[in-house]
Length: 102
Image (tube, rainbow, N blue to C red; front, top):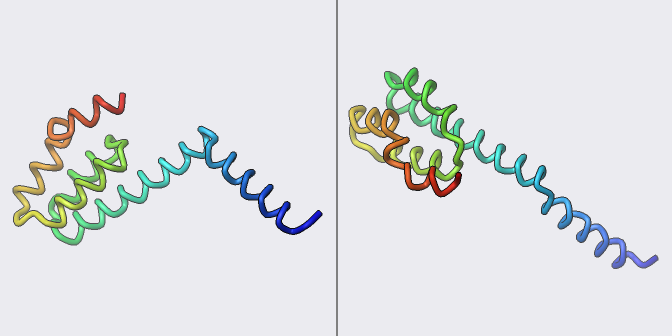
């Protein structure tokens, strides 16, 4: 069997695996966990006083996109007051995205 046939078969198998729902779920969970870590690290570095609040709120956020957007907001806000508002009110701020995902 020529090498090219093995390569094509291998690629097709990888494509099939990538399309499996469980594989997609693991990828999503990995992205989610990674974004949680980034968000928490940003809070710890910029607003250590908000670490407890972020630790309480972050596990409830199951969207990597929302976590990413919050991380950007925490990285760019000018005050702990603004950061606290985003962390406390994330469900209200992102309610449209949350409902679309359901």
